[in-house]
Image (cartoon, rainbow, N blue to C red; front, side, top):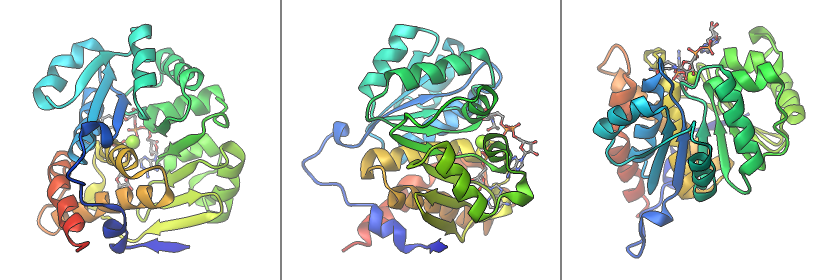
Length: 279
Ligand SMILES: NC(=O)C1=CN([C@@H]2O[C@H](COP(=O)(O)OP(=O)(O)OC[C@H]3O[C@@H](n4cnc5c(N)ncnc54)[C@H](O)[C@@H]3O)[C@@H](O)[C@H]2O)[C@@H](O)CC1
Ligand SMILES: Nc1ncnc2c1ncn2[C@@H]1O[C@H](COP(=O)(O)OP(=O)(O)O)[C@@H](O)[C@H]1O
Ligand SMILES: [Mg+2]
């Protein structure tokens, strides 16, 4: 099992070329949030914007538009219950996050089916409620070409059928190869693991200050920003996961709890530090 260390950040994060514009840095659609979980959509979107994603659209319930526009004016909004707007957004974006704060409802089931039916080469990041509904409804993930799954151990238990003590690297690899071969799986926990084809990488950073609501929602936005700018690969996703816990470890030196909003606010300066260290 290979360990992910700091060197991954300068390997993946590039200095931006002078001749470039927002269209070069990823178009991200975040399908997230519901009446009771508005914060999840906000935290995912804030992280994607701060990671440098060129254009970010949040598909959510319309009563959350004002909160999003005030807190993240960089992001656009659509209502995921408007079928035509959603299909249009799916075709225009190259990275799609689905799940944070959606709740496990028939609406979430419908949203997943709409995505599976309408995507082509888009990178799909499935998290939280989307994973719960995939497990409940036994949805086939094999047709998604570029898939990233980000369950915590409880969500992975539902998806894989493996109880937490049985989530060994061997069992996890076998399960992901039968559920969605070629997808990239992150099992989130203390010292998270990434599975991709036959490879297994492990994070050696992170801390219990991260055990707070919204920390995983923030990770989805960071991963989206990374794959949108640096491509779909094990390296890009490893770098995103490392950046998340690297910033968290710095905050934890002084703060008892690592607030997801504070973590997100430190993304641009931390990325610039590693982009500049290339020369
Ligand atoms: N501010 C917000 O809007 C927030 C919304 N959230 C949303 O709330 C919904 C439910 O997500 P939850 O994850 O809370 O609930 P879930 O019910 O999906 O998962 C929690 C269950 O998994 C178990 N578990 C085992 N190992 C775990 C691990 N390593 N980490 C976490 N749980 C573990 C827990 O004991 C519990 O039974 C999701 O849509 C999520 O995105 C949360 O992200 C919290 C913040
Ligand atoms: N004790 C811990 N040590 C290291 N990382 C942790 C710890 N607790 C939580 N995390 C990290 O925080 C994130 C929590 O994700 P998740 O449970 O999906 O949060 P939420 O759904 O509330 O946003 C994961 O990246 C996980 O690895
Ligand atoms: Mg989560």
